[in-house]
Image (cartoon, rainbow, N blue to C red; front, side, top):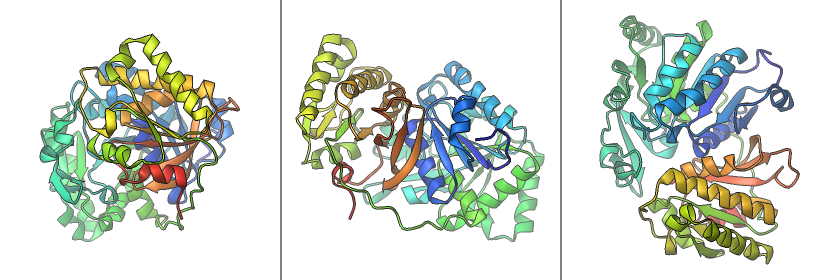
Length: 434
């Protein structure tokens, strides 16, 4: 893209790869010219991208400590300021899982906000299409047929790295250094625009660190988007939250009407799915993946034994070379479990295994399950960008990889967070949609 050409509306950083692809898909389906870079883009890569409305950078800040986050995000902030996008978006997980010492959303806001300039820092809570609801500042999330307050959610309350023990996002973020988070509750959206603007102005006069905006229903998105965009027009701002930040802006611009989703064709060759840390949702998907040859990976040995890692990558590559579809998972029989190994080390080992497999057997379609696994596995590949191809499920996009290596360029890749997708997701990745 031509630097500072005036077309760019949103520049976002995804704190993990799976979430970054959901935002990419959200923007593309809203008609925004969008590209997701897999690292800080060079000027040459920006030129190759052409004119964009929405530019993303997929990162791994969710797995970093505050010092690592500063080293990661300072160059991002400088680039976004140079590009001049009115909205700088720090894309968080839809469940806001984070902690003061790991993936701190508060640290990210403190690092990026000076590059935006605007004192208004909106935080959008909730993303109804993923069954995430922010009600009076408290976050609720679906799990199976039920909806749970986040601190009672059967998975997120027990997350192995960032368990959510507080559903009130204001209190949650206060522990991460944002001591003053004001809030606008969803009933306030029924006011006329002038009254709501006056309410927000009153809150901003108190100079809060951020303002949390409830979202409990899709009908709230356009109002939230208007509040963000009108302030961004006066001075560029930093917004934080899940893909509902882009949904809100698109609803305000009335560009949120989506065309019929493109059909996904069946895979034309062998498909590999690599499942890292298994959530109960992913475990069900693994159990339902009857078309794949499943290969169990010993998580502890994968991180500590180079010979074992080489042996398993060779076994997987051999099966793929025979035309078999392979699902390699770090828990036997698709059973969700916790391992006595560091989650980040496991994700890095999974990325190294994936790199070896792809060097041995070129593939045209690939799936990776697990937020940290996706982030670090893709970073192990020699690729620089992703564009949206189609949607496999809410929150799960099928993307095309952009690489200077012919064997990787055009690879179709699914990156999936632990809570995303229906039971048949891996089968859909293989067989396509009707």
